[in-house]
Image (cartoon, rainbow, N blue to C red):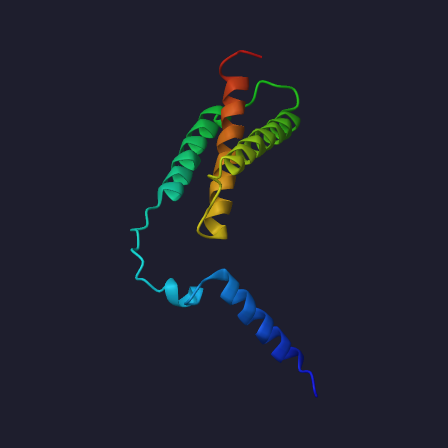
Length: 132
């Protein structure tokens, strides 16, 4: 008597299928036509808006020389703080399950525009508001 491993697996799966109580396989049950939702580009529009606002803020800051002794060091520190603020925001969005994108390019565009926005807002607070 030859034992074929595929016959044993087949018998085991048939027994498990009988215990599960399902009379039709899952792929036949889920073939109902699905309603397609019209795709909206909310994330892309938010990214474009944040990038535009960031460009305007940075233009208003950088149109005249910076009033600090080491401007490159100030910009690098502001960029690092902006990246960390954005990372905390991204982690928060991930935990509330809102960090989902259709493709990798919209995620990269959204993340870079948020980093750009938080950095420009931080620089505006530092140079224009006089808080520091």
